[in-house]
Length: 302
Image (cartoon, rainbow, N blue to C red; front, side, top):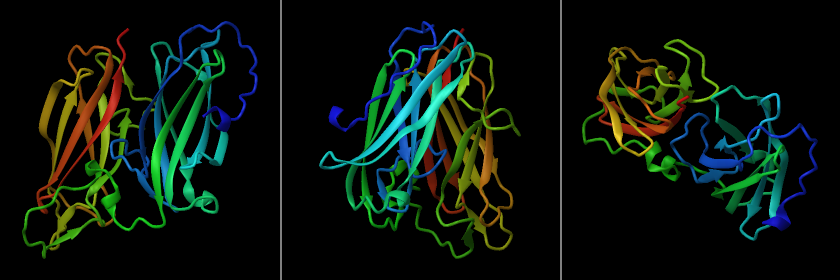
């Protein structure tokens, strides 16, 4: 891999790092949908946008508690040749609040911009993260397949596809949009709050999650939908610690082209530090379809 990477420029000294540990980067997901972290996509068309999500931890800080991290990105073909490179795709230079030990990084690549350099086949998207204070670097990669066109949702992972509905008549059912699926899934500051920058929480803090559901069924006569939302929370060891089947039921009028938004409230009792997983299941009672997805947050214990 060395022969394909550009030289990292020498960086200025900001003083002795406050955090002398090795930089860590976890590749969370790759998908063609922004803010949908649990539905992985491995096959993309030449017109798709590739969304990449990472968790960056164990970064150094200068004397002003400011981190200095850059991300470089390259796309490599099956013959290990670089077809595109984006140096300094992302720069993280900000003051780190006490107790914060994780940054959630989101970026994207528009394949249509590179269509003159790409052709159908297998590629690797490689991200290099560099801590400019310690010069530590981490490289993570995703293998993808690029096709000329992607005409059906069959290229997506099972988590992003509805289960097969039972055989029943749907002549009186219309859909809000083409496919029953999740839209945006974001952590927010309250029931009507703004999106949170980071999914980091402390014990006693309420977790609010906004979940968009698209493509649900509506009765043709009155436009009413019937959705049931289940929620399960798993601790860092993978043990189920919270079970809320039917936490929200929606039995009201839907709107064509508009998602139903569930705002879910979660409170954990005596949580310990680590990454927790929220498992969501949404059932459309009118069509019999069901979709599932997962999202994670991190609990920080002082």
